Amino acid sequence: MTARPSFVVEDQSEVIAFLAARLAPARRIDTHGAVVFLSGVRAYKLKRAVKFPYMDFSTSARRAAMCAAEIEINRRLAPEIYLGVAPIRRDRGGELVLGEPGETAAGAVDWLVVMRRFDEEGLLGRMAARGVLTPQLMTALGARIARFHDGLPAIVAGFGGPDDYRHSVAADVRQMREAGERLDPAASEALAEAMPRALEPFVDLVARRAAAGAVRRCHGDLHLRNIVMLAGAPVPFDAIEFSDRIANIDVLYDLAFTLMDLARQGLHGLANRLLNEWLWRIAELPAAPHDEALALLPLFLSRRAAIRAYVDSAMTAVSGADNAPARAYQRAALGFLQPAPPRLLAVGGLSGSGKTTLALKLAPEVGRAPGAVVVRSDVERKREAGVALEERMPAGSYTAEASAKVYAAFMARTERVLRAGHSVVLDAVFAKPAERAAAEALARKVGVPFQGIWLDVPKQVAQERVAARTGDASDATPAVVERQFGYDLGAIDWERRPA
Image 1 (cartoon, rainbow, N blue to C red):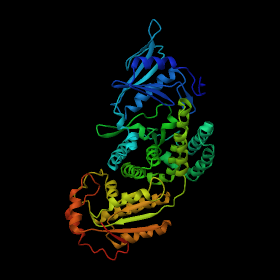
Image 2 (cartoon, helix red, strand yellow):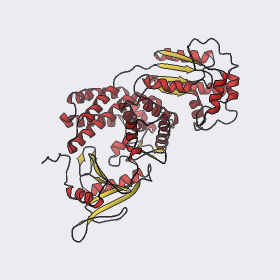
Image 3 (cartoon, rainbow, N blue to C red):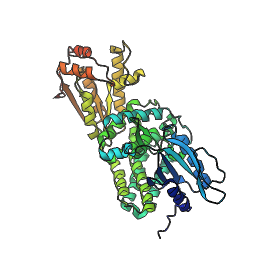
Image 4 (cartoon, rainbow, N blue to C red):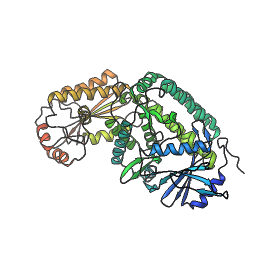
């Protein structure tokens, strides 16, 4: 008989056997913290009687409270999934009985989170395995997560400070070491050195982010298996309910779980697209811009992979499964901390030349994971004006004064990203020689390599392209293209490519 792991503090075998018989589930899903029964149109989640440093379900009362918290938190994200909490109680004869969602039951033996089932093939984790995730889906997901983050209140005091980060990193190290041979001990020790080293240069940034309101009550567990397609849209679910310490985090750290999950599976283009879509849409924090927080992204990605490693190792302790996936997460965690000096690329050309298409194609392969930030003049113009990316600017917005202001903001954002150690691909017309010179001068100022690319396009092709656009940040029309072909572009010494 297999010994019960030390973190399992109560025998729930009677309850689990009852649920298996009562629900006759089509499938049972076991994790380190829960047993989920899929039965009919519902899913029933029983929280395991476990106690980890980061998660305590050790008593029935605690599990009841956490079931209620899970419903409350997740209804903000996925109200169509979460139905309520149901008790498991004993009848007068001492037999176990399953109650209905919302039913109260004094002295209940245990509790279940009751959810509406969905098509599991719509889980983004499964879609990734089938190779059917798309850039368009990343656009929708980036917008969804940005809206969610923008709607959360800031947590200004008590969370997210430098010492909180130090303690959290130390906890990651301790958990990996305690996993012992279930993980690779050599990798655990390498991360024990590398993760604190990646944090310490940026403790002032951590403090500024917390003071500026970047720390919020986030999802906390935003990997691909916790996002599902419903009615054609990506919906995050299964947010962390059991720990404010885990869920009260920097919004970029929340996003980092999804980025890590994509990058670890080799989906670098999709991870890059998601990061850029989120950055283009998230409301700015003037006192601590999200661009500056990219200095923390290698640590954020590494921590997310390390956490997945020791959580998966705990799961193998329960299930007896292979430890290889957990160790693969350790290798990924180390990889995210490998240095990759930043670079600046600039893609110029008249409207309809394919600048954004090329910029997004190049970005995943430039710099550190998940690739370069694409800084678009069209996006910057909409952000400066407070206009949604898919909406057109009001008439009269495209003045010389407004364009100069946009280019100044565009270059300032680029400098912030580069100084955070992250590469940039610039996407703008760059019709004026002075604008092209300014991009090159910025690279020299920051001390990074520069590459300029100019796209040549026939006028008719450019006009056909802009006429066919829908839902894009660019407001260019065939008439705008006509005017641009009359510009005096001056000498272009960037690499010229046919569009």
